[in-house]
Image (cartoon, rainbow, N blue to C red; front, side, top):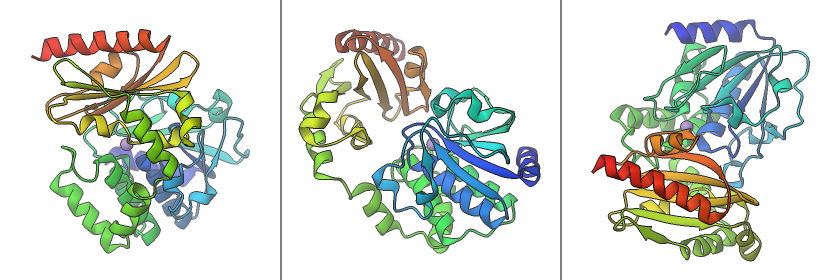
Length: 324
Ligand SMILES: [Mn+2]
């Protein structure tokens, strides 16, 4: 608890606070920000939330999401003396310029295996199922009672980072915490509808286009999916709609590793990995300069699609060779 005490003290001393999470934020990053935002406002603090990327449509139902600003040219007002990074393993993934952090204390609260302790105060709990799990603790340390808005946001962090309570980190304690959050006002069905059953027709067309690229290698142990820029226009979708598509690769019988290679811009690709059961993919991403968790990781690579595919293929071959 020493660390929470240090963070508590820093919050007490802060005049104004900015919360920030990684680019292309997910339910854990946004839910953690919003839960902590509501708690800190109740605690009497002036609080902002600013991210590089906009809030994806599926998370705009979260209470308070309309206060979140985005972009890389934002300068916090001069009273802001504390930044809290949530759910981000590497400062580069915040995608904010150096001036954003200048002269301000930076606290790093996260659960990624590959977190590189970029803050001045770091609370990294690698066995936490979600950053939101840690924020629940912090809210308790601040002495704040969980409101319905906080419960809704924290429930989303658990739901999304545990793959709907399926991943190995879904301990009985995680289920108990979910129960606590439901008692505090989180509504599982409406939340699930917002997060998982509010797709645009464009997203479904993108899914169809993406699935049509499916390729199986290594005796069908590895499933590959691809998304090109041209697909967005053809399907009336955008990069937000790629969220979760990789899971369709992993859900194939006998697949151990799913790979999605997504064109971010000309000759620049975002590669995401998902592992199943005993197959971990954190090191794969690390070998390619990225990071993440044991079962969900990613990296960015330059070159033509064929070059990127070959590079990833080689790394997977070496990892499957050593594991079998
Ligand atoms: Mn997370």
